[in-house]
Image (cartoon, rainbow, N blue to C red; front, top):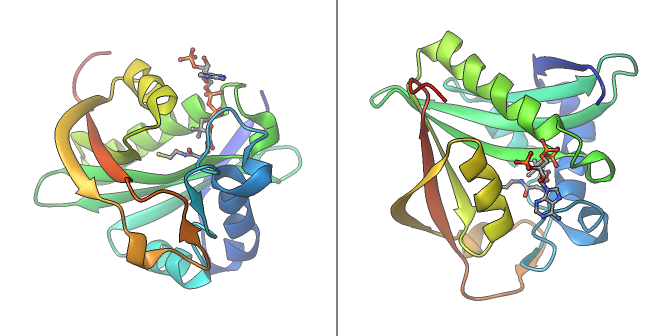
Length: 182
Ligand SMILES: CC(C)(COP(=O)(O)OP(=O)(O)OC[C@H]1O[C@@H](n2cnc3c(N)ncnc32)[C@H](O)[C@@H]1OP(=O)(O)O)[C@@H](O)C(=O)NCCC(=O)NCCS
């Protein structure tokens, strides 16, 4: 696995970050990875404005993981702090499809969990996953995430330059107690 260097994204990173996210989630590029949403949604996943909103959010950080030797962006994720509950939302998780399955996702997730504890004193991480992505829910399960039983609506009306390929999408909410010994 490449040596990773982590840093918060800035607006200047959007032109490289947005295509990485799209490649990981959507379309034929995503099919090179082991899990994706290419058969569920056909849109851009997020646009410049959406990314800028996340990057500029006072309680949020978009983390970039780059290859330390080349500087190439190979993964990213978003963490968004909810101060009232000391919970952080984890999302926008993407690894370059060609190099998935090599441990980068695990390393980025572990970094994000440590980051939110150190930055905000967060005690819980939560995320949403489309209910039918069983292989991914199992992957999160092996990282300590459990289904809460809560369901959230899929944002059909907020898709970016595209459409959903199914009308039965909704999110499972998963969470992990960051204070528990794994
Ligand atoms: C989810 C994602 C970030 C994981 O990144 P990654 O770098 O592939 O993850 P890792 O290499 O650390 O993990 C490899 C794991 O995948 C598993 N895996 C590999 N191929 C698999 C397959 N065909 N089916 C099921 N699991 C598989 C391995 O068993 C290993 O898990 P384990 O160590 O628990 O056994 C990445 O696949 C991705 O970007 N997907 C597209 C975007 C996405 O779906 N994001 C999450 C939305 S909620």
